[in-house]
Length: 273
Length: 365
Image (cartoon, each protein chain N blue to C red):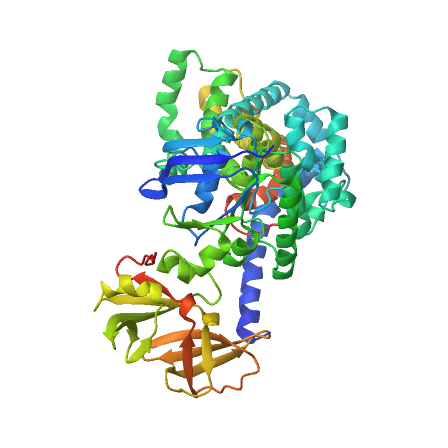
């Protein structure tokens, strides 16, 4: 290997390492702290691993008032979001992948613009509108907002997925006796299923993590992040760690499962099958 | 079983591009018709219009006498083999082949029998339990053909089925497709840009250009009597040679002049040519219809050899005549060196004349 190449490699790996540590170190400490016995949390210098493993903190968090309820709310909202998003996003992705229509490229670009719009600006008008429509402080209301947030990603991911299913296959099915819909159901859908599952998980994670809209639009029916956000300032440190770790866990899990599709979505690096 | 296909004034446009231009076409029952042309000439679109995968803008499509213009592909009695094979990756070979019959609610036992039969015909009966990812390109191709044939279609449509195979396999499958067609006898429309494939497979060849059929004839006619300069230049390896020739009269006889060289013409042509005295025509002649003399004798066209390529069964010369470059096929035994001046003689019967402006072949008698 030539000298400049070694240099470039070293720089590359160092920056990768920096980014990885940037993300992983906090997660590591949050994770460790949430399983550390309470009296050890404030110790200094901090040991890298706790003296013994304790689930007291986690248990305390899960049993504290409102957590279980908001956890259920979160799951409900996420599932509703998932259903709404796939119901609208998957057909949209299919359309973009399969059909040439006027303004298709514009649509693909434009769909991301909704994400560029700062939600904070929308807070008051949204709350007012939701109160007027009777959606304020309801799970469906939060799910609708989450759907609006997840939809662009869902469309982009499903577009990629359906583009990966050759049009020929559906046409072949049509020449063999299927209707348009039948060809979709028997050929395109089964082949797209793993990718659609990935899109579903991503949507779930977006909703699970979303805190701003959920906080503004609910009072009693808080989702978990909203609940934690509103109670956290008044809570002891170990409660915050436990809450944080509990929030991270499903996200990490789902992201790990679908990482290949996320790479695919950004149109880049080929992750191994 | 085999049906006739008739296109009446079929037109298909994509935006401003006219892919198929008011096409009329009649394919006889059991005929093997090849649609041949360069990419973008509309041959695949024509096939897809017959299949029902494209809706025609104008005109009608008939299969077996029924107007199928407004019917979806499933109801047209066709089967199609795609360029990419389009074998379903999530089904085994047996499920792939049986797919169409399943869609038509054929009883299971019958499907099993039919699949086995057609798999044997295509020699893939050993592979029935495999998935497409475990097959080679040639095997996938066979699955695609089997999947179409098992339907016992009235019309079989094939879109460049051999273009993804390597050269040797292509040669082998070509012969096999021809044999299959003879055994099954389904009316077949076959799209290709490979003129050798077209010549070897077709009962008739429709040469297409810019959405229109330029010539529809048997392979021999298309090869020997191309209707236009385009067809002559598209078909044959190497393509036909072209020279500019002037119609002249000397010693009471009409002849063609290539520079100073006098090319004798068929007696039957003289009457017609006499009316065209002084006009410039395009003279077309194939490489194998030019005789080579080692030195430029009296009555031969002098030419300088640029390149000599031994091709095994023949020797292909690239020669220069004035500003024109010709390809000449000759015996591999003839000792010829680059730079050498040789004499050429055109076989009179094989000369083809084209109008310079329209590119259309002149018709005699």
